[in-house]
Image (cartoon, rainbow, N blue to C red; front, side, top):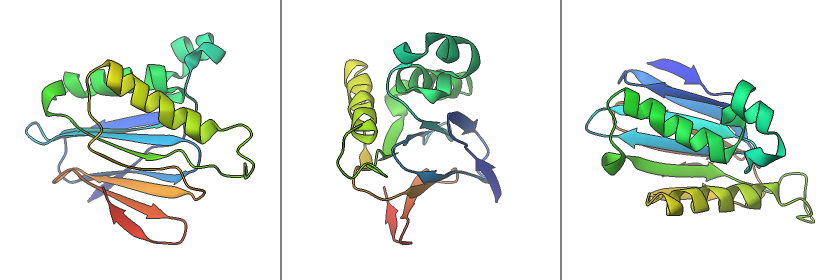
Length: 161
């Protein structure tokens, strides 16, 4: 099995059933995982912030994967180019924790969760399952053989989405 690591403000896609796509230490960031079971195409986005309007130049030129509103469309379009179809896509979401923000002052995690839900709602896409919020980091794996998504929290607990 080949491991493909998704960094912060990054995304990766695959059509190889031997691959596992993984991202580590999701705090307030969100991992959006998509998988088309018929085409065996999947991908993962690890975005930091909800709105690209805070830095349009970075979103357009350098790093659209940093933001939900530019990264999610990029992830889907990239999967479509490999044969995935929107109507078959299974969508799973993890992250959006309140880390180092116990008073919930900045609410970055919550803003990210809200942004994801709004984007999918507006585009008529349902989130199949999610593991969001709380106050702990997560590691997320997408197994390309069957589309399984495994979430590990900082305490080592496993959850299949």
